[in-house]
Length: 299
Image (cartoon, rainbow, N blue to C red; front, side, top):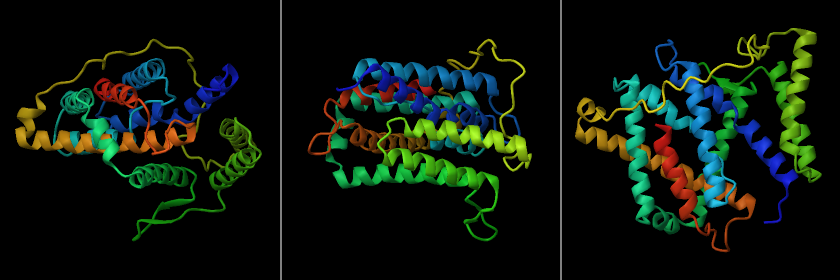
């Protein structure tokens, strides 16, 4: 498809850096605010294992450059809705995700998922991918300190004189300038350059504006992975929630997963040149099947 080893390496490294936040955010969410949730080390191991293995399978089986990782919306549903809200144990909550993955895999195997995707107008598919992009943009604005939760309003401007906002602006300028010049590694260079500049400025100024979560040099670089959470799921949520509520919960999560994947495939597929003149992804059955199996593996 006109690629080469250098392009693939840069693309893979850029994708990893852009997505690597999930390695830390997913365990933090599932750990719960009071620390009573899943252990961080074991959750991090499971996150990396499933994302890495399923992304490799996606590339080898479907020959499409779609990376897979846990979704921020679904892990929040598991932690705050199923566990804290419904009172499920984490194995039971993961059982809900496995059940959703089984259901959506069946839909792929019978061709219904692809059929429904083809029925959705192209404009709506693009709108979904735009919505996902805006959600990611919002996360960036919050993490960059440009906006924050308001007192009486959902959002308000952050401290625009702070160092995080300055670094956000510098990162955007570097990345946009490189993109305008057609540099293929623009995003990767922008991320690395901004990180280096931020570390240098923080060491020089010692403002502490990046908060207590700023990166520190680890005391231990290598450790044994904790696989204790692998396979820890239970279908006893049916008896806990009741059959009706359990089925509705599975369907609700499946719908979120369904349209999230559709929007992502259209957005990424459009940028990669995968779509045909009708805005459809040829041979979409393969990436859809891998994505569905990944939903099961994520539980």
